[in-house]
Length: 181
Image 1: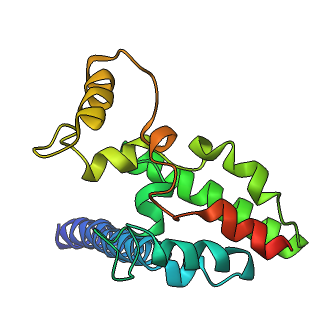
Image 2 (image 1 turned 180 degrees about the vertical axis):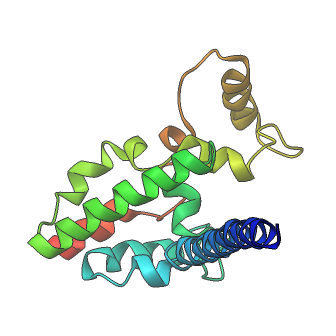
């Protein structure tokens, strides 16, 4: 009888130990993931590759950068990753990170000026809306009021970046063209 109880106790201790160790491993992995996601989302990390130098410079000087003119500082991931949930955010972060890393290793540098024509593929509307919840704020101009009203009522499909093309990086096109010459 004592042997049966001992076996039973031993099995339950093994099962509980497995759950505890598994739980600790899961918590550790989660904390490491959260830390890595945080560490890889700012200009210091994104600007570590020379291809991004000009983007970091123009961002610092823009209205969401760190310069004196910065109204509200935004990190790279605030604009360049979706804010529609954790899973889409992490998938886009992984996909973009792998793409940029492979491009860097291969020495591939895209035609950045041409890419500006497709800027809506690189900036997520949900990022704008994460901070700019009130599109019709007190004190905005009549022109802005009418444009934002059309967005709210669905009378236009324009995105924020279609009208506010220089908000993130100022006059990026001029800076890129100067760099090419």
